[in-house]
Image 1 (cartoon, one colour):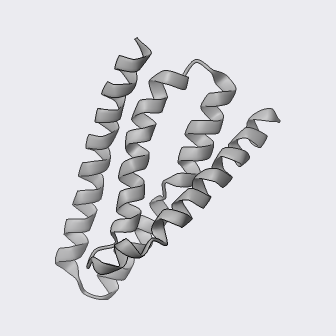
Image 2 (tube, helix red, strand yellow):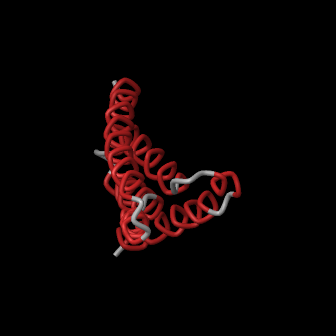
Image 3 (cartoon, helix red, strand yellow):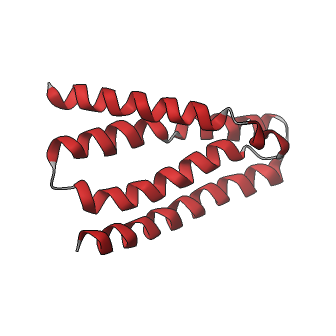
Length: 121
């Protein structure tokens, strides 16, 4: 039961932070939906850093990994933005956005893991 409470608490904070970041006006000037891109790439980096640090600490792991980072990052918004680009027939933007998101999230995760492992040891 404590796991569920901690996950819920972390998710509420993560989702609120995502909502705040995606509402920033700085992202309005771009032709691609970079707000969700920024959130997901940042979340991937934080996931990489956090994994080696909290993997052994049960409750903290659930709160940070599943709760906060699960609430912070968003695949569903990414999917909606892909659909919108498709419906607008912005196929080049769709391909560019999709590959950028996947590539930079993987790079950020790998960088985060390197940082996290070096901190943990």
